[in-house]
Image (cartoon, rainbow, N blue to C red):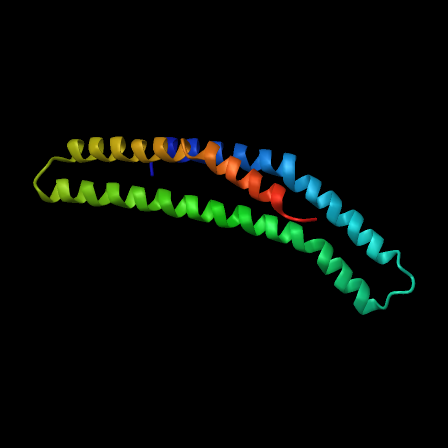
Amino acid sequence: MAEAHQARVQNVVEEMVQGLERDNIRIMQGRMFRCSAECCERPSDSMSQVHQCIDRCHTPLARAQGLVTSELEKFQDRLARCTMHCNDKAKDLFDSGAKEPAVKSLMERCVGSCVDDHVNLIPSMTRRLKDNLDSIQQ
């Protein structure tokens, strides 16, 4: 993918991730640490019980991080498939005898279209992630 297109996607995704981290993940991290501290303040619990308690405190955040990672992987896979389709179209055009400038132009337009389509998916992906993060029980 051309550097400008890659930078554009990266910036939009980074903005989304930073917003999720600021608005959702940090809150969950705070809850996890407070919950873990409460586990450690139970003098009558055994070491095993304290560790189980701490594990329970960490579960929601681990689920949240897994959810975000999974969604980003799916997004990346879809974008990669789209750009591979562009590569195939460019190869077919080149194989049919087209000159390099025409192939590069097709590739640039096609990849640009992929990027536009996927950048336009970010708002709905963000809403879906926020809804799912909000639904994770603490």
